[in-house]
Amino acid sequence: MDEIISRLNEEGYLVSKDFISNIPKNFDVVGFLNLLKNKIKDNKEITVLNKDILLSVLKDKKTIELNWGEFDESKALLEKGKDGEMYQTFVDLLNYEASKKKLEKIMGSVGIEEEIELLEEEKTESNVIILKSHKEEAQKRSVDDFTNHFRKRFEILSNILKTRQELKEVISLNRLNGKKDHERICVIGMIIEKRVTKNDNILIRIEDFTGEIVAIINKNNSKIFLEAKDLCDDEIIGLLGSKNGDIIYVEEIVFPDVPLSQGLRKFDEEVYCAFISDVHVGSKVFYEGEFKNFLKWVNGDYGSEEQKNIAKKLKYLFIGGDLVEGVGIYSGQENDLIIKDIYKQYDYFTQLIKKISNHVQIIICPGNHDALRLTEPQPAIGKDYCKDLIEMNNVYMVSNPALVNIHSNANFSGFDVLLYHGTSFNYYMDSVDSIRQNGGTTRADLIMQYLMKRRHLAPTHIATSYIPNPNTDSLVIDKVPDFLLTGHIHRLSVSNYRNVSLINASCWVGQTDFQEKVGLIPEPCKVVVVNLQTRDTKVLNFIDDGSQQTN
Image (cartoon, rainbow, N blue to C red; front, side):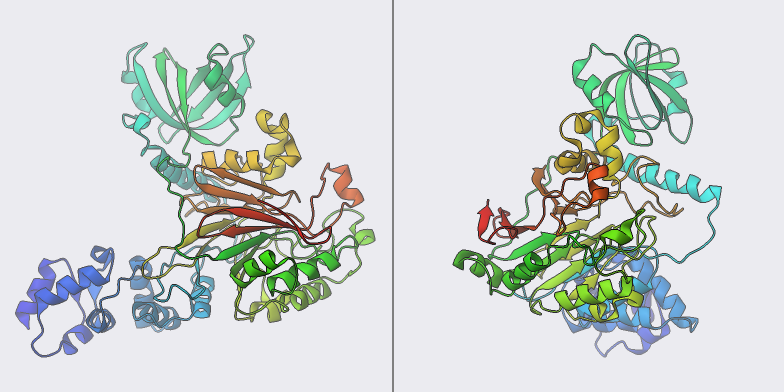
């Protein structure tokens, strides 16, 4: 026994008493270590081997990924008698016994943001895994929370930038003092000021943890000058150029961006997912009949034969927020409501969604019209408003934003879908020259590309209201998704940016007087359907006769 313990210690593992008491006869420690390496990815993150890990490794050879830091924390809580449910769920995951609902439940219970990855065995079964859904208890915020929030954002995005080949020789700003004039330099910083000089050049002031410096983008450098015109406060960029005194003369701007190596992921069978948003149940201009026709199509009872065949293979439906019209969202809204009670609005939305067959998995995030705080990340809509909806076996309520994985199995990693309602869009359609001058409210595709390039859903401090989490920035796009779903501006947009499918979903309401005042021109009742085998996209139009379709 001492030899076994000694060998495990040599490999960097501590062993618990229940591990030792459950070691079987003729135990092969070398064989066990090999099984451990094959079974558990990132096994070096495990600090203590206990009975549950032992039995799981000996049980089968399937590979599993877990957040081992959280595993150890949940084990410590169990030992203190504080929380055994979280640890038991991790054990279930180790043994492939966790149900989808249990996965969702643990996501809701562990706090701010957790990541759980699990590969299912059967590739024919619809599979939804919530990778990131944000939940945080109300608490008092301090100035330090804002400071640490921005520091954390800087750390995450600067680490992404440092993977870029152009920035391999990056230095901190305080080290510029040791550089000679006209020497080529490479830095990363957060923009804290941007303005146009009297000579029509663009001046930006950037900072990092060590200091700040002024950088000039010359108007004669046409390529980067156009990029510089679109820069916004608080975004984090890399700069290449030369130093002259206390000024950097910029020759190239580097954004965090999506790697060019990002592949276009496809599944080996014909499976479909659909994307909608902004249903606005309760509004006088809600397209109720058209939405009911959409629900009939989902169940295979509406549309052409081709469309019905697609519906038979539909496995996933994403809804990008604003399930209901809400109450008190804007002045005079009561005149636009046909259902004036917020609870009854959610009740009717639930009645509609219950018409959908159980074989379709429904993933729902909130929006600014839903009965939640406006600050982001918004938590998932709670049981106070839609208990029956939440308890449906095929419904997954997530936060705004959220990251969800669908259709994974033992041989396929699945598709990552980032859901964000899009509240920050209003700021960028007004503030970014290239977006405003090329359509503004009608060009969701440009806004989405802009945000993907910056790897942040709201890089500017005033773009949206947010909660300053000192431990992370939930609006950073740290993991590049396969799909980005947004809504909010009631316009349909489908585009591709570096193999990321960008979908701004249509709405299900007409134009109100308020929307007309703010320049919102809805494009309602259109559904984006994606073939996961080819990644081809179709748009189904339900506002006419339900039969119109574009590729």
